[in-house]
Amino acid sequence: MPDGHTLLSNADGTIRADGPDVLVCECRGDGIDLAVRRVATFALVVSLIIAGLVTARAAPFPIVFIAVAWSACAIAALLLVRRRRRLHGVFRLDFERAELTHEGIGFRRTFPIQMIAGVSTPPAQDAEADDPGLSPRWLLLHLSNGERLRLAKAPPYALGPALAFLRRAGIEP
Image 1 (cartoon, rainbow, N blue to C red):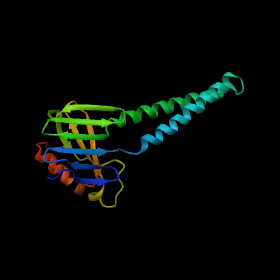
Image 2 (cartoon, helix red, strand yellow):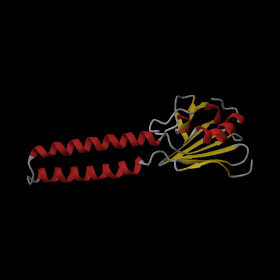
Image 3 (cartoon, rainbow, N blue to C red):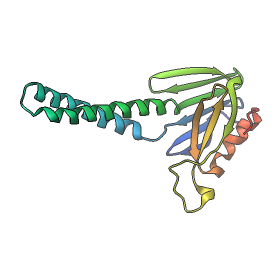
Image 4 (spheres, one colour):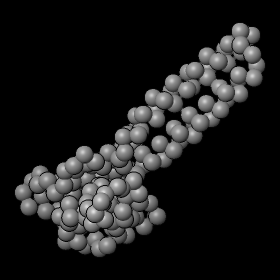
């Protein structure tokens, strides 16, 4: 396989074969991360302003409960997005060096390739298609420690070349 051969390219990410022994997958995830961070930042800033107004006695005390609720929701949303961020990123499966590298926003992890327990293609929960055969599916990599990593999201026919590459490398569904 030539260097940089693209196996999949869509709005949700790309899969590229860099030679016969390296698979590079970029799965950006759902673009909710930036939106949640901006809305949460807004909610936290407004909560601080409300708390300052209540402290200065420029606003009635019961309004502080709104600020507390906004803060709690903002923190919960940020924690949820942070947890989901660990599923996505850039994955480099190097079968020659026997390592899996996962790079995401603010982290980089490396696993031995032997930790890969298998691969699956479950349907994406947010999928809406008229034909069930064309509805998007996740290409999930299962690790022996129980983690699941999302390599790509595409219709089943588009995931075929990547699944064939993984089968040739010895990773079975």
